[in-house]
Length: 204
Ligand SMILES: CC(C)(COP(=O)(O)OP(=O)(O)OC[C@H]1O[C@@H](n2cnc3c(N)ncnc32)[C@H](O)[C@@H]1OP(=O)(O)O)[C@@H](O)C(=O)NCCC(=O)NCCS
Image (cartoon, rainbow, N blue to C red; front, side, top):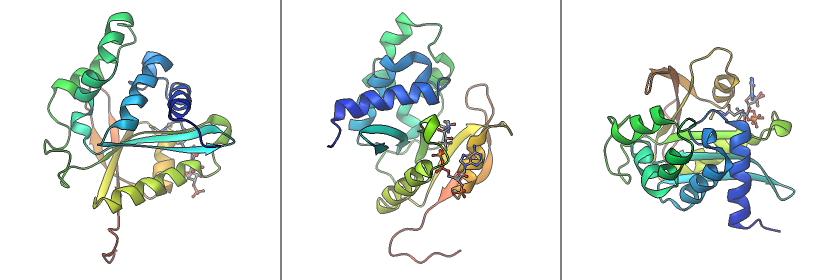
């Protein structure tokens, strides 16, 4: 039985807050995460993918084709302003203000412009299901979707912490560290995934 959109959004939101409680979305709780996923699942410039097993969402990811405008669009199209009022101490002011009103992180081109580099914003697998290949399958699906759209690469930011297991995961999935950035007071590693465009020969 296929899960309804409302159930997918609800399960994604709960899984996100469990797996990434310190992320900008996770800090505001499952109520805000539902608002975020309702927006992201309908957005023409976000790709939200899930792995479902036995009618349960067990892994999910969000890619933005326009990461430089995501913060501003979250302010405009999700319940973020409401949560700024009711949960000011949990509100991710640093991230949201930097994203919404700061300099664009990568490019200011329109979302349809292929020079914009897509960004894998979130990826997570339910704790009891980790190590079984769900994360890698999501990465494979992201690769397919982005290369079909003509993108040659995408990036991901992750905490610059040698103990952060996400770095090993990304490297095992074919990403390479290309630099460090400090978008809002904290250091992040930037990893890049290069894609083969269908019909074009790889030069590697
Ligand atoms: C990172 C995460 C998404 C990995 O998901 P997963 O479903 O366990 O990953 P997979 O089973 O598909 O693993 C893919 C590869 O990464 C490796 N890997 C996964 N987790 C790893 C870890 N903690 N340490 C080292 N390698 C790891 C696997 O060994 C596998 O490599 P292999 O196929 O060459 O053996 C998951 O651990 C998670 O949800 N973490 C918490 C949320 C998070 O940190 N997300 C990333 C930041 S947004």
